[in-house]
Length: 298
Image 1 (cartoon, rainbow, N blue to C red):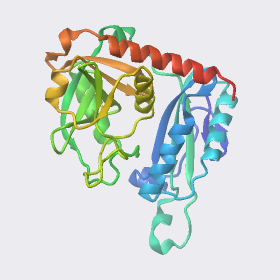
Image 2 (image 1 turned 135 degrees about the vertical axis):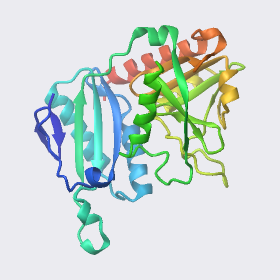
Image 3 (image 1 turned 120 degrees about the vertical axis):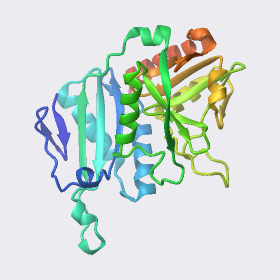
Image 4 (image 1 turned 30 degrees about the vertical axis):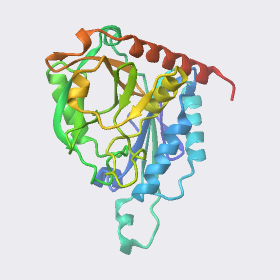
């Protein structure tokens, strides 16, 4: 598969970005990862809208042409004749030297779209659930980049490596108030009394509250939409470790695995270690939604 870089395609491994690029120099940039099914990206408009909101909020750009990005994605899919794939779109402001106030010139952005094979997850993950660990680094609401999908991912990848070293699939991050924030690369849901609870994401805060460091996931939003369509109440609220340990069910969402059941938190099992009916229902509903939206006309 060939990589899209600023309007041109390059064979895998041959696309090159300058060492002066702000993404390489300072991890200044944003990215979105999404899935292609039946030759069509699932909810690309939602991913690009989130990218634009983050670019506006963080000052990367206040005039992103997301229609041009969508066209670049379409070109990448067509050029590579993709039916099923994983795409990562990365945007940086370009030459780092032009970010300095004295530069006097507007940087030329770098846009990269890398297609790869979708991650193959063990089917047992979805039938038996996975284990997660609690991570000791707090998500910081005072960090203006928190809750945005920036290139500064070292801490999250480090937490994932630590989870994998003990056989866990994900690391759950706590907030500075010791409430659950999210997974390193996912959003968290729990089921209690037949209702869904999920930590408050950026943009969902009540007036006067601390900013949320939680990314508003595109798959998370789709699951909330499906839950409400199935007449399940959804509460966006502070969620404690005790809430998780006492939950009837728990699951994680992201674009790669969709809905991933959680049946163990370190040494403690959740609801006897079995995948619950609400999780199964929402996983099936999400798969149906993906199929419907990626096979429809337009």
